[in-house]
Length: 463
Image 1: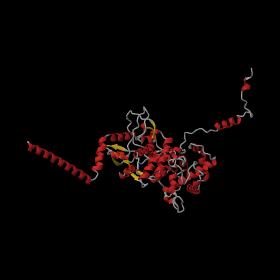
Image 2: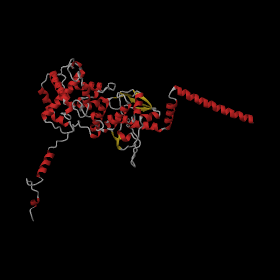
Image 3: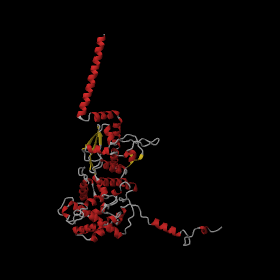
Image 4: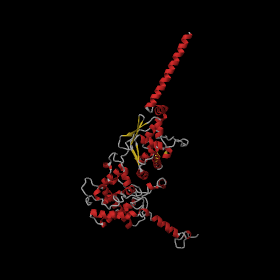
């Protein structure tokens, strides 16, 4: 019997598989462990195709994901100047900041979903230049005295309006902790002392003012630097979470994985044995069912209520910046947050339900609920529907506005509401029409009475 070893494949250079084995072993060995700190990722292709510009920086790159792109290179010199000014402002050396970033390089890299191709020196340089740029932008926005006449961002040619939207894009982020590390209130020379001078407070006033959400409930007390991932997460925390909804829900269950296309189109075929997904009505359909519309008085944009035939919606403002803001928040929620915390996702979802046509947008504007800075109802509708394409209701039972949808459906299901609305909207919608209808009714009534009297009189004579 031959020795079993003679049947083994020898591990020598003559083995044709040896190069492949070596290559694959090296490939597997060099795989880095996945980090739980991951919070910055690229936007999926399914969302990018709807609005590429909403996810791609147009003027300035922040962090490594878009660094080096040709269209963004002109801003690099301005960023370098801001770094130089920050070093002078803090009176600390370049070496001091390089060492700070170098110590946390591994943590910084772990925050990105993909492997960063830059070597250590280049990566540290990118982080330092971009972090100093961000801090300087916040400082100069807050303290106008720091803006000199040659400042290209805030003065001529005033690039600020193009710069700050790029700071809200998910792919264009630095981890917030590195901004906190490089921001030392005691070292920074500012025009005057200010209480609670911190990177959190500067960011709070910066985004709250620029995003026109100063009327919303104050959430500053709930924001801590240790709980913020980056600026997209920070912006999300500016919105107060929805009011607590009642825990007692009907035992009725809905299928999972429902997209907003399914929830907004009534002709969706239902699989056999599948519980039907309720189809909420649009603004126009609600109007035809006699629903009244009113601006919500609360400071929480998620506090949409329906009571006694009136739908209350907190004021909404849409502009060119709304899409950039909301859909980057939406992607962040879908990739990082629990299903029960997808407030922005659900908010865009309910807007997508209520708005199916330009007429729906016009109704919102007419009732002072929507401020449409796009100027055109068709553009407003297109923006809302584009944002709605990115919404995903994983479980309808966890959809924050599910109880609202059910109430609206119940109201519209009652025929008397539609008949009453038809009468009011077509025959009693103006004083003139109301008088005309009453006059016509009186004429018919008098005619009927006269006819009855004539019949009675004829019968009396005949007898």
